[in-house]
Image (spheres, one colour):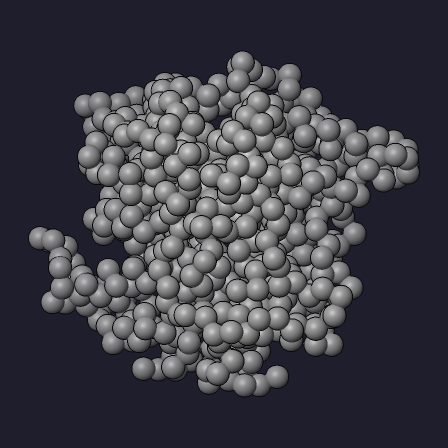
Length: 617
């Protein structure tokens, strides 16, 4: 089949799969401290299907400036999900096992009303209407020091509530073209930071985990703003279980298996460190991807380069879900399993809705060419296991189901099945937000005379609810429809992690914390609540502290104790000044990101990447 570079908008995964109050409960730092969580426990390693609290053995560059050392043993290809929270010791979890019938939820009604159902939802709702004085104070401080904020969707609801209100405040009072606050996914965070710098921002606060601040700083530097400091909200490392899974010797060993292939491409999830991208590039041609464009990337790559082997990592669930997605399309082909009235995925539909250069035969070849790294996942998305899915099927059959591409297969499969009838979506955080917004808009614009409540299962981190509430409120307000309500259902518990008594006890693997449930409404025996403990190292108090330090530094002319203290809040700098095979590690780490950017613009793999895959320099 001839390869092509398509400008089709159907590349997006979602398009392919789915046509003023301060409450008593603080979600951020204080709550984590109450649970006995400290910054030292956010360094994970994989032990027996769960996560321990020390740093993993990393494959980093070390002092030898070469990437040629390290494990090279063959790695079994195409392994399937191996993580299971039931691998946790019964001593740590048995007391909390329970079945789930009703999950907590937020009901968004006419005139912006919010009705929380259950204690977890009540905690979320408390901060959707933040204190006006707090909002005004933060907004004024940001403008006074010309500082921008880029925050991930997964920030806690208190912080997001304030940031959303600051956005609105600045739209009304500031003369800036763009607000100094943006809430987005990990890729868009860098783009927003560049826009802020173009308007004169003198500093950027990045609210996320370390690889995000590192990525934001890299994108800014590539756009001529490397002199603008990027500050994290914690002087200690803000880890990520998924990113760290790609920093093990086993990941390098897996990549080295591709050296025997005539043509191979490593598609690495953007949610990894710059060091991972640099070392990977030194071993095999590499391009980054997001959960929004990963399907488009592998479709185009396989159509553009015949007999290409695709290595996908480090997210095992996402890789396996991509294979499941392709299998589902093939199963619903011309002679496959199609419901009455459902259009089959025959060659014509594949070319129209998936990729113009693909058909049934080429999709089979693509499926068989994908090699998924078998040992990486996100501790948050891992929470959505079989028990949660069972409750969804049993009690929420009438609901729309959304699932991030990183969730385990059970949750993904139910969302995938729903998506075939446009009753669900699988994709990125942005895809989920767009799907919910579209469904609410369709219902609101229908001018129905009867009351209707749309239920959405939120199969991703609970922090997404702030952006969802904002969007739904805007839609209902714009249409003036008072007959439509949207219920956002959290298929989870109120705690993502629990303290393990006697953390030195061998029964808990010596863990200070373990992923799991902590008892109470909404708990699942297959996991816990989808709230990321790493993301929650960002909170409102920490943000104000950093902004205050920047203000004092500016008042002191860039000198003083604050200037020295702020250095600890800069992004990780593990590759700066290092070389791999005689090439700058920063250049190597940036290359996959630039390849992805070019691909997103041109809808083709860049010529330089194709040349590398085919054996060129």
